[in-house]
Amino acid sequence: MTAEFAVALPAVVLLLAFLLAGGAAGITQLRLEDAARAGARASARGETSGSVDGIVKRLAGEGVTTSLTDDGDWVTVTASSPVGGALGPLIPWTLKASATARAEAATP
Image 1 (cartoon, one colour):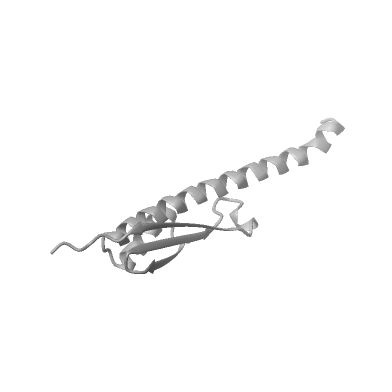
Image 2 (image 1 turned 180 degrees about the horizontal axis):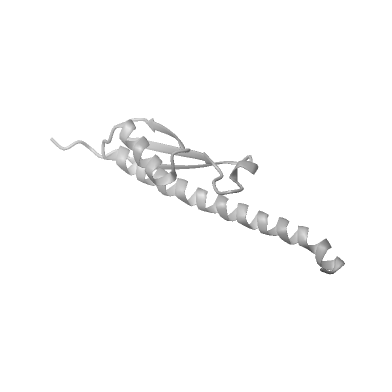
């Protein structure tokens, strides 16, 4: 092993760690957005808040926190979660996504 390789190796490992952490954050954000959208759609159809929470957790993982806001005409679901992946515990980021849908009228 050459001295140059020994000096460069920590920088390469650090770069790979940052790339993996960025990828994990991106995947977590996409899962949160999909889960919030599905939860808002379910809530707009009239699903209960427990059912909406189950949908969001199924799509984004058990570690997700869900909040539901219903103002009558519009429902908003917000999902938040720390970054996942092997390096997730080392990254103090909490990612958040929200989606809003118009509440559907009940059929008689």
